Length: 80
Image (cartoon, rainbow, N blue to C red; front, side):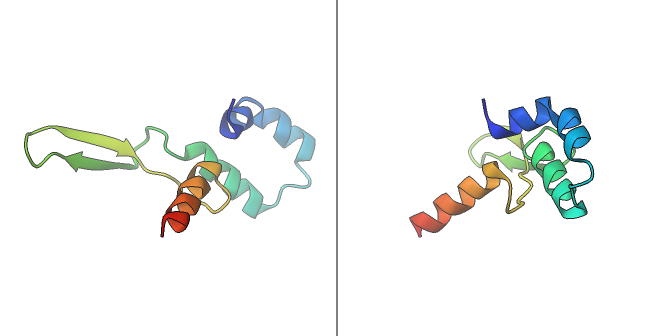
């Protein structure tokens, strides 16, 4: 099970237990991670140059604390 799945499943309990300790910045990070790469209105459309096929891909949040985005950023940096 991924971190984001655990966070999604237990968000209410987490908020109740740590409500007084969560800052606005932390809350913004949590909700950015929860919306990362979900099928929302924020998508990127790719089109094939050889045929008429198109595909929509959900955008990542790009937050520095997001394990999904951070992994890609780290991998890109290492590749360079």
